[in-house]
Length: 134
Length: 406
Image 1: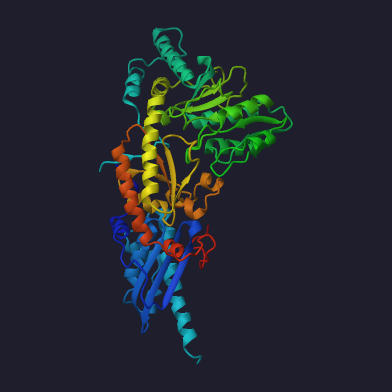
Image 2: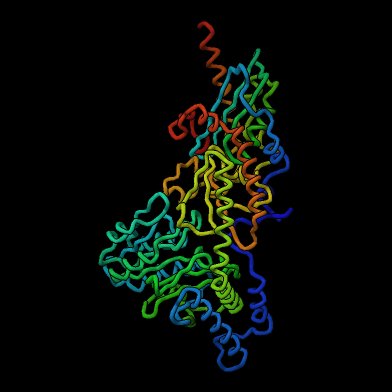
């Protein structure tokens, strides 16, 4: 018998069932909130950056199984990465790391990429705001 | 894995009694009911006539001949709307009065007719989906050729005041069509008592086979066929009759009538067990549809701050459907929930439970456990739940931007 689970790879289901890094990073210095409840998904990504390295990342997501799994995967992928390397992460990369997504769910991986970019932009903005102008 | 099937609005399993009744027509009795020169044809004609009588009895049709067999309720709805519109195409102006929450077979047929200059008017509905009878009456004028209002809604289960609608239709001399697909076998309906001129029937929603349905057409009502050919079915639907399907529909109708009272009472108890359990065990939920005038097997619930598809995943092993965009290929949330003003974020978190013959109290209890656990887990990771706890209004909250272009 088939059910909704059959649409997803084992890796997606693992990240849906056992999501990594759920929550809010303590002393986060970058936050990205993207999506829209009216569209059925909202992701909040918080990061802690030290010396241009993302030392911690956590997420909270309202969304479908694919949205939760991509959120979880992106937090795993960015931890330990430099900001420059983190910005290289694309929705395609997140999707590939999850062993692919059903066609109608591919837009969910865009959410994770956008949340990451928004969190990094927020960090950059916070840094600019607190450091004196050169 | 043992699946619990709770999606009986979508379809129902074939009843063993129905299959048994169909077997002769699928094997030895293969005649064409139109062949009147030999016994094969006569036997097939006899089977079709018996089935026609069974279907007529289910809906209270005075004559078996009032039943026109079709390929299903989608065709029956199309025949009702287009058949009337085309039969009245001599009129300079025509309009059809219907509801925004009708089945797509009615709405899309109506949309097609708009291109032929038939005006479509939507009667107002209340937040439960019940038609506003005063507005309905106000929408009718001398150019109204049809009122098409479903008996009960397939998503939210709301039952319409069919008899009152029938009275209004009769008073204005306008034919009244109702898609009764979801109601048959679960709610008593009688075309004479309720002043119904046309009624759509589907076999597979009442434990019959797929690919067969019927339209009750009151005698004297003129329809232009949408399928031309050999002039079958009183010239209203050509095509060699689907004898096994028709026999199956007949048997399913007989059982639906026989078990109506006992089964709808049993379903109501189960549904109330599910509803009460959800309301007692899970916070921040809202029932979509009418609190009482609702099909006994239907429950549509919005679980705030969680998304429907992820909650369906949490109910692994249970076959359910959702108003969420993420479970539809179109990525649009339910138009029915939208039409009754359920906010989008709640529509995305809505599940539809459709109980049926195979379901037991044990099933309901398993589903309640899964829901309670699933909702708790998903809310723990929901940013909307955090916002709600902080008192932020979700509908007015500002988000950086739409993640998708829709």
